[in-house]
Image 1 (cartoon, rainbow, N blue to C red):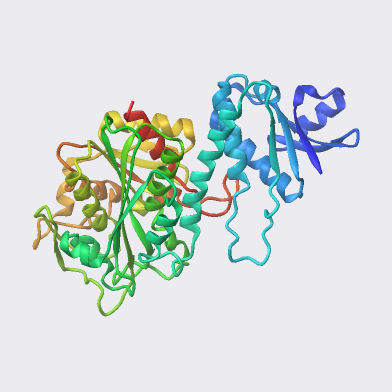
Image 2 (image 1 turned 180 degrees about the horizontal axis):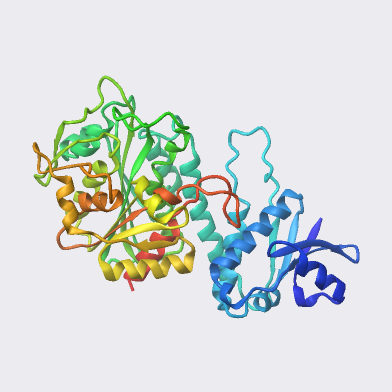
Length: 457
């Protein structure tokens, strides 16, 4: 069974147009002259954006796939008539990207997958748009890879198997994979990572992913938090459903997806992804509140709360970025609930270099990984004061939690590097809408890849 996607203005009868106008949503699936059609409704000028294109495409793709329609045919003219204010290259790329992400599902452990038969998108190519279609597919595949990592069960994806998963994924790419085991972590004095992971039956690990498409470009380091499950450690989280805490490695998934996108796009960049991996659980060997960590850079940190573990392992990643001589450093993590309270579930928070904050916001506005610039308030540094170490890993005040977390990380940023910190805790999961399903978002893969390309120009 096939279905054609047409524009509202292609309807011949006034009653058909009235029917579509009065129907809810951005499109209508209907039968006209014994043929199935998806009729795209008119889009207002202020909604003529690439993100709107992705959302519409994703919703249609999921809808028609659930109806077990084998193929959907759309002409380039249909899309340009519906979104005349969106550049054609951006339009075709975004529609393809949204379509493939809209049919994403993680059904590994289900007996029946409602989206097992995905509707094939056929773009009528009279305008030489094959490159734009291919680009959209690559972007969707990279984001889907990040989603897969985040959705996977913690007994399947843990600090010991996560490196294997990355080695498998990048086996035939230009990405080099280096894995540091526990012995190597001890040799390299990655004490934050060792402390956080010492209570788990899985030894912590650290993975470096390197891709160089142009060695004349500045080195960009992407540091992703890889806590494969977070109970809070000894500072145990509340009794609510903790199953989503397998997604506490969303930052690691983001940098992994970004690397996949950059390598498969043959991007002319020089980039390394640094992923500290640990499981944070309570055990007789677990780190206790009050203990002090001495980092390789000489700074000491008192652990006020073991549930503020992400920043402890990111610190080792930031120190490593400095050792590698990175000129740009971006760390990303599901770091604080405070950022979700501040920005909700559609925006990540970005801290650091003010000019780069604005640049990243522009990129996110274009590609759908939305972020909002957040301040670094120097006066709040005192909230991290400790009686027994240089500073604590947790604020002494019940305010500005995401800001104080960023201030903590700033202590470990290489002095010569331009730095951004992205807190994605509020955007790691989504409800079914547009090209998002009821699962992990894959946030950050596109954001970091596009940012890396932008600063490498």
